[in-house]
Image (tube, rainbow, N blue to C red):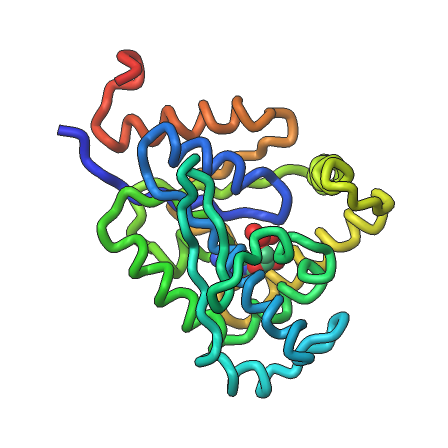
Length: 235
Ligand code: DC
């Protein structure tokens, strides 16, 4: 019998975690959870309420209003996931550079993490979840059956994110994109609570020279073995 497992995919910004996690979830019939979207929704709330500007965050102000924030991930009929903030579809607005520039300091606030980690754990209780983020293998699901730490060199990550932004009509220089990624990497990996780090039992995958499909196929092979399926049979 096929057993359900939880898959944790952590790693640096813009190395394709969400694309690969989404592909894996869809092929396994699992639930995909983008934990970064949840932090982005809280960052958007902070911006909208004047609690965050550029890189300055009113942390006590945001913590005092955390109870007003309701973040929900809903699955669309086509399997894609949509993020809702207090009942409003914010899937597009959480992907802007305005949100990207404040999300790392917002996600470094311990109370924000406590709130979101609790929601994430509840979503993974029944297993059969692929969740991507920064602390999934270390904090959210320390006993996930498969943990992957995904990375790629910063130039390649910058190129990928730049192409993605251009396709959405967002024009930035490569330098600006790379700067945002390295700023976020630094804050994410040096913050006090749940910093981005590779869990000891996570498998390191550097996909600098792999595309999304190759990365997905590589990780899927490992998932099949862990689910007790023979990778040769394609079952
Ligand atoms: O995956 P992403 O780039 O959409 O994530 C946005 C930010 O949220 C990222 O800079 C760090 C934070 N984050 C986090 O601290 N922990 C997670 N599990 C996911 C994201």
